[in-house]
Image 1 (cartoon, rainbow, N blue to C red):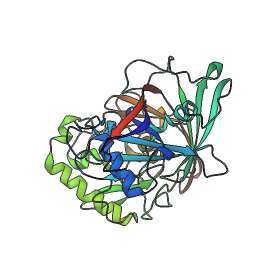
Image 2: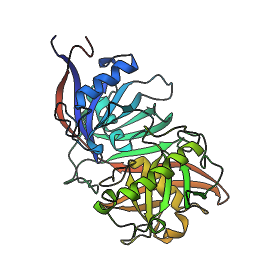
Image 3: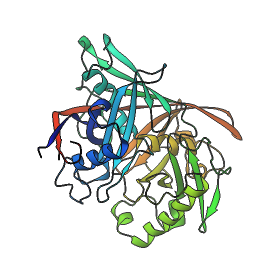
Image 4: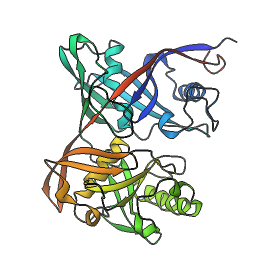
Length: 360
């Protein structure tokens, strides 16, 4: 049987990379769609040698985009995290880095008509049922990819893409603190379970015997990873997410005091692989926790370093700046919105081939 060609645009979005598909170009049946994505990326295989995956969590991601079903949005965005070594596709979380490419992709594929100068695109995130405004540079009515904007974790510079997030509290659980507490004990560790743009369990690195500035040492410590995973699974249960053994949410952050002028330092796990930089949605969650009293992050944060609502989160590749609008009292805070600047690059436009037996 011949292979089947599926159109896609291969892009870097923020500090991630992967294929962007039109929803209509993929199977409507979820099980078949997932088999197609696994075959396209080359999973399950540690090298992803038989597909276009990059054998790393940050490069085994997929964006699926369509005209929006929502009256107040232009396009729908469904994110899929394709497991590298397992036959599993997770659409529970979102990805703010891959989100960076959704606006440009929507214009490239004719889903959105570009405006002179810049184009504002209203995106509905299917994973989290949240809404994001992307502002894409479109001089002369075309997407501009080149520019002077730099982001830590990506070499060179590119045109800025501003992402404005709203309706982000309780993205998957419906509550800021899904367990009802800003701080609690799990397996003898004091943690914060919080859901802002991404459900997360936050640890103070020192409680785990770390400085919080490690990189490769974290991934080589099997006992440490097992302890983190045990607490993560219990956090998932307490947060109402059920059995999260096969899921990547809640995500994990190991927090420490900042060292380079930021508000807080974070090591972001996805959930058992260290992010080379930091996830956007995870950055929003960590940044929010740093600005709220009673959390694990609060005593570690240098809030005086926050200027005009910009919270700098230090990570292994540099820093991620998140602009937060938090209203209300410390006891009853309201996270109104979050903004972040990313970049994207169009890498390859064509078709990816999958065996016809998977999707005739």
